[in-house]
Length: 161
Image (cartoon, rainbow, N blue to C red; front, side):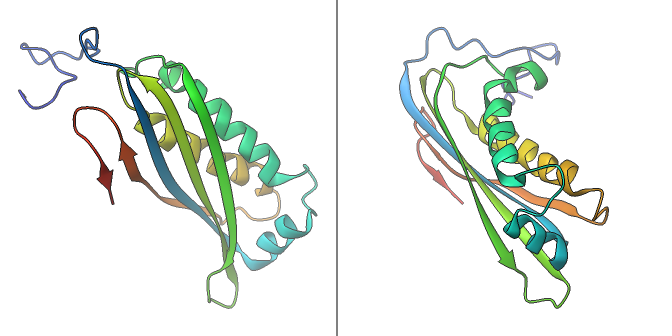
């Protein structure tokens, strides 16, 4: 367990001490998608979802989630996030009856620890919000392919998927 920083010498969970780490500029980019019926995608695109503007609500939900990540992921440090941006791409999948909303979150911080979990949480909550707003017409939606695309800053350097 020596390589796992969230466990102490006895194997118990702990929050990593970042006191002695230098503050650096850090960025994380995460991606995810929601698969749905083509009709659901067209209703989102046309603004015809009864609960309102799906992507606007999902964008706010994702930003709020990034800011609250340390409240829901036990070992995450509370961070003073300096920027969060969510973007959405509405795509036909090539299948006759399905479409998808791709989600990308970019989260930035000037700090002692990275923002990967914040970016992943932003994408996850944005996807859940899309599901929540459209479930009345499409309970078959699938949330998936949530992953880290890129991470910059910190001791471990630059990661690109």
